[in-house]
Length: 223
Length: 326
Image (cartoon, rainbow over all chains, first blue to last red; front, side, top):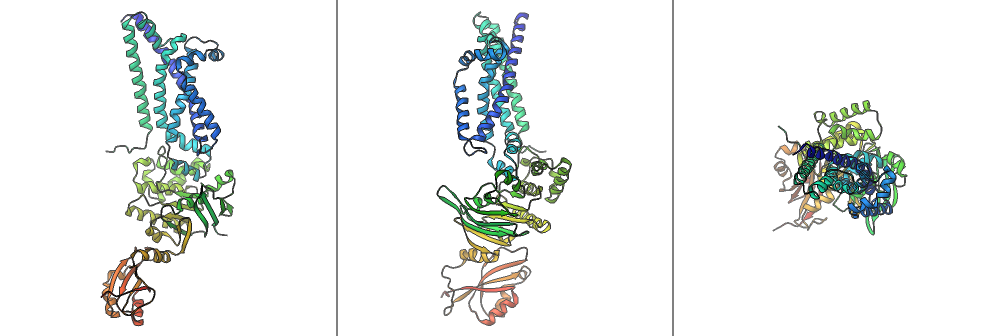
């Protein structure tokens, strides 16, 4: 493998990581509050506001229904407004985040709903406010699930970021299409696939280890 | 003023009546047991008493404040006066034993140093000082319930509510937890209201009992009164009558001390009374008083017999008569 190809691969990997991590963090920043809001305002929740719950749910589903490649194009004016340009790695972070926020929100919502209602009762009975229930019960108790959900979101973002090549964002997917597919360079193609496989395995492995470390529901083996 | 006054409480879900016209009082330092089958309305009543649910009508006065109508912001503060112990413990899995016990104190914004001191005290009280740093998943059921009790006591509540606190535990652990609760009541003078479906738990812990059936209170009194009505019904022959017939056998409840049980009691009584005694049932011991209730059948009953019985037992009471079998 030539030096040139290695350079290409390295730059593309950095760009991919940049897009995935930045939009992953934004997905949590936007998606987690959204998930908490969905759980709290749901009928029978701690702060039931069915109209809000329904509206938010509809918006979340609407964004998730749009294929990412379409979303990428639809959002071009918005992206230009936010970052000043619609081209390049930074610009790609905008549509990636917009797609990842509702995705992570739905995954986080499931984890939050799985928290034992008895624990919510326990803290409410102690005289905890609704905010304390979120702070002491919902978030810490669902943390291992949230970490797993975040891992899934990151892996999905690795896939989605490949499409961002369509707006000149660079990254591994873009490299594979332009060099590997359009120029019939099998070496590049295989190199990209190898890097992607390793990247996804590392992300998933790190997520699993962290989630397991934080999960205290199973007795740890002794002796 | 009583610590807890419940007046004409009603709660229904849709058309289904869960609680109907419930009234009772609990004085400071009392131990009240509420017993009923599943579906009798016990859990609904407990949720109302703990301020997690509101009745449609009626009053629940805790230290003079009506939980039924108190605005949410004030109710949150009033709930801190109540400690709740759950059947399934409901400990936070993400927190250590010490952090679970500290939670009510964090909620009440008790300063950190004071919190540490109080948690150490409480873990000592429930015998878990060595387990402070463990996570609940590493503990046995009995240990988890001890954490639950320590947590319920943390914020120095005026009232301890127990929701089937021993129903998920094995008999020995149940015994230990009930002893702990009785201790807490005696040493701290803490008022305890508990619900259960087990007669044995009522017998061991309660001073006063309410029997709940289909959302209504159908009986109230001391455990002994209630046990008569409930347990005897189950074990006595269906042909029990209240008046003697020619040659009928008497069914007598004898209350004797636990020591007396160590002697060949029935044989002794037979000799003294000149009557044949058959033991029908031994009721679970009333541990605190050190008494045991026996239900016996006698084939002859005279005034002298009853006198002899009363001389040997703490109490003897004729429950009814059954026809003699030929």
